[in-house]
Length: 276
Image (cartoon, rainbow, N blue to C red; front, top):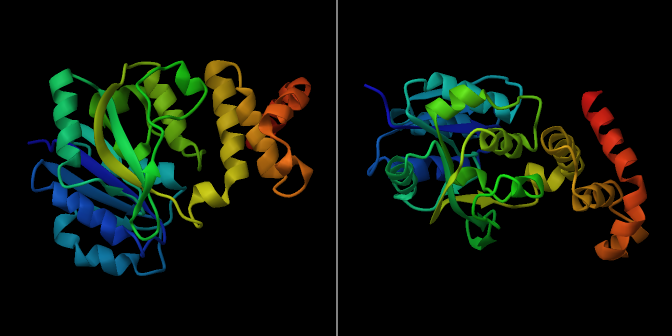
């Protein structure tokens, strides 16, 4: 008999937070049928002791070198191959409450959605809510301008995963954004106006420490799938490459016309860097 929902935790040295992530999933087990796979990339902090502590609640876990977060998610989904739906929760994120998974699964079932997503909070390193992710109703064209879908609040069906294919393991920052775009080429997304996941923002997150790579990947993805790159992404890339100096004090509305004549050269340079 298949399990309704498989939840994958990709992890690497998140011993400070993975227990909170696990506890938030385990709490949801009281209200819905789910299985947990933790794909750890070989942590050398307290992660393994946490995993052993919760072994009885985890269906599958391993700790071994991988090729990054996307590879870990793919491995976790493959390990939970009998599930009808999938979600993934980063080891430093959590679910909103013990009904989060049930809410989005029930919504998917009732609306016959193969992909759906909900609202999401930002939390800090202490777990306090600091704001809301700028989630919007689904519009596939709007995805070509901004990522308005929060990863811990997304659910997709096994059928959608098999049809769309696995996450791209070459991507390390925009793996989720690129996957939403690929899914949106095949499916309409359901949007439930309920809080599902909470994404943690703090100084040591990949998003905070690897901004330049984030913008390179986003520019390559947008050119590939939409044939164009919005100017605000290009300006953001330039600012991330020059964190100090006069550019940081120039208003973006003034930078945009200055950058416009060079936009194609900047895009091509990003694509070339990504392919090197």
